[in-house]
Length: 114
Image 1 (tube, helix red, strand yellow):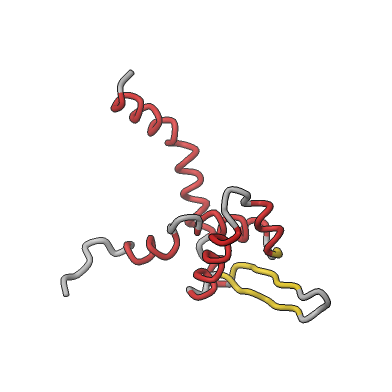
Image 2 (cartoon, rainbow, N blue to C red):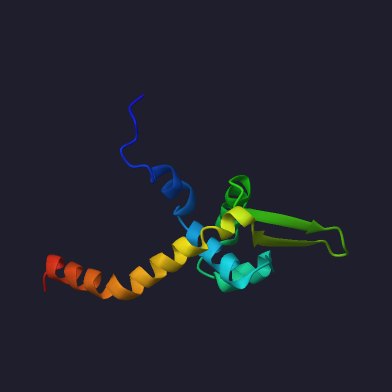
């Protein structure tokens, strides 16, 4: 099997999948929350997709699901210690975005023409 020329490829697949960064960003910055709270913070994600993302993140060890056998039952999600190690990466990307998104928009406009 040939060696992957991009050493971050596997990480990109795990962390930067569709809606995954949105979920991780909210949980990392806002802390532990219930599904409905997360859904309110991310209204552009359907409940089905949000559930899928949370399950995948839990499987990957980046999010922890806590079940509380109360009446009614309560479930909360939060980033794990491993998930929180991504915080500096997200902060770096946010800073890069602040500095360069205007340049990307200008380049796209030039490329696409009038």
